[in-house]
Image (cartoon, rainbow, N blue to C red; front, top):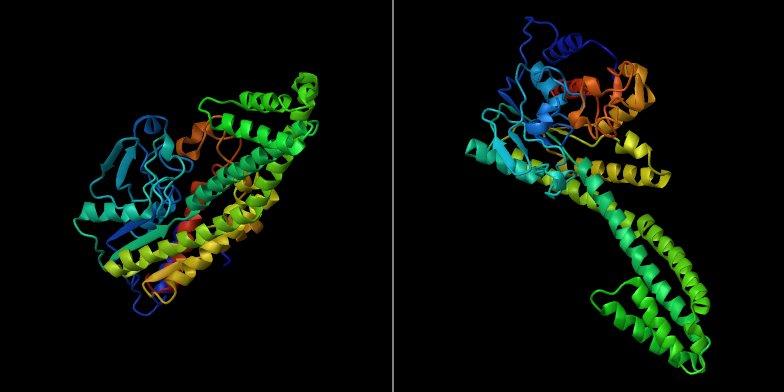
Length: 436
């Protein structure tokens, strides 16, 4: 979809005119008188879950460039709600052991949240990262019912943290596969070379292998003690005493280590490229199917008539992704598109749901930034030598120069300007659906 640069007020008026016929009796009242905006999702929709304690004191709380005046909209659900004459505020304030419901607030999105897995990015450091399934439960608890009214506008955007979680798991699993392959190669290579000089290499190899296995199973063993056990067993074999000299076994150990490194690297890379990558893509298909199920069963199935679901923007275009290898970027793109395909399939033929194509929109912003008034599409507006995340980024921690129309605040999160563009995009979809 193309989307042209315009003023916020003018665009809002144009949407309402188009939605209401633009003439006739001149009635500009939206077709649906929404009473509230209820949001579920992750940091891309979080309007202040973590704005407490030191984070609030640092002038942070939202995953973008934080405003000096807390009530200033900076995240797309806030811009969207404001255009509808409503508000969007965090339904939970928490970090670490703190998890406080906020009366009257209905934005349940939390930075780090995944679709179902409760352990998202930042969880180990204290972020709540409550997934969509728990956010829905929180909504039910706060409202004494899990139902929605026919006048609520419900927004859902999640899945990016599933990419991050699955790629992190992929890295861990690939390292484990590489380590196992390296250890196996090291043992086989060392046993063979240590046994080569014995009168009976086959018998010697069996004895050396048993010594290594026994020592490896002992609590408190080290690489050095395992090698020592192998060398001692080798030197004890008939005709093989010379191998007990460091001058003899030293080069053999070094050669085995080199072979292990080569084999481990190859095995790890092969896993990451094939089996591991396939598992990551499948994981995104699962997450999308789960999210679609929650929308249909726990939101539409509970009475919601107006639900906006955004697919994932192209995560491969973020600065963090662009810092990675071409193969890693390709995997992230495959994970993103797979998620979006399964999400669309899962929500097909659900008239209560409008699916917003954020993926195509950000791709067009990157390719045609001038069309959107975007001045930079790959540089982080926040000075990452001063902050670790846009969560605590504000005017005092920006890079030098005018960053007001940058695409990205940090490595993955958009600036307030782009959040405003996102709200405009959503409004255009609502208008086309006849909801405005």
